[in-house]
Image 1 (cartoon, rainbow, N blue to C red):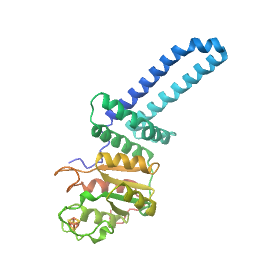
Image 2 (cartoon, helix red, strand yellow):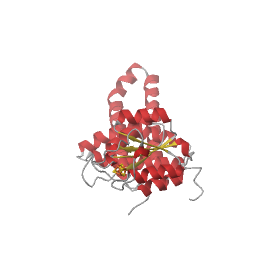
Image 3 (spheres, rainbow, N blue to C red):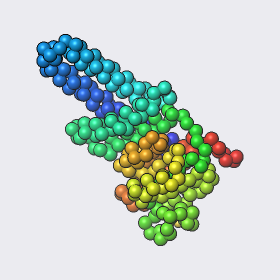
Image 4 (cartoon, helix red, strand yellow):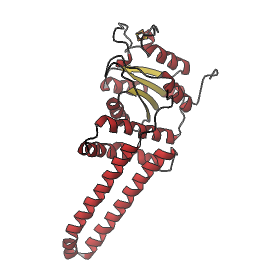
Length: 259
Ligand code: SF4
């Protein structure tokens, strides 16, 4: 069993992102080819400024994508890694989805890949946090479907019966003294984040919810852990609790004495 949170499988998102930038450069070059004679007619200075603005734009785009790739594969913090994160979250992901659609690639595959890229960025930032600054955010579908205990208001109500992973996750948060909460949807997740104001989030969810969450709470770093769905989506989902523990051990400054 792979315990390390997955940061492999980044290639698909990086390939689609690079391709989208190459296509954009080709389109702008074509546009330049069409309008440059007209610009020269109006003014040589205007044509010169447009051409050089285009070159600077291309240089920024090429450096941006190189930085994204370099950060992902080395997981090192470069001076402008934050720019790479912003570029990939705000701009590259939506374009990658459109391109993927054209090639018949399933959205969830691209989302998977995006989560791995995001996790590499989080690793690259190499920041450490106090336990009280960390929130473990869980989806409601982790709770066993037959469990009648109300854990959404307080996860401590769970009696650790062992039918689902909630009990172990609760124990994990208690052991490391981090916040832990269960969200039944995006609105509640946002409210929890506003109330707790975490500086780092470890989120468990399916591909779609993870991507939405990562984009929603940006610039708060989110380490995404995809849940397992042995009985299909949204019912009795599971997560390998040790993956979260490993992540906590890497990001916490104040580890308990017995670790
Ligand atoms: S472990 Fe907790 S949440 Fe899960 S079924 Fe048992 S009591 Fe309910």
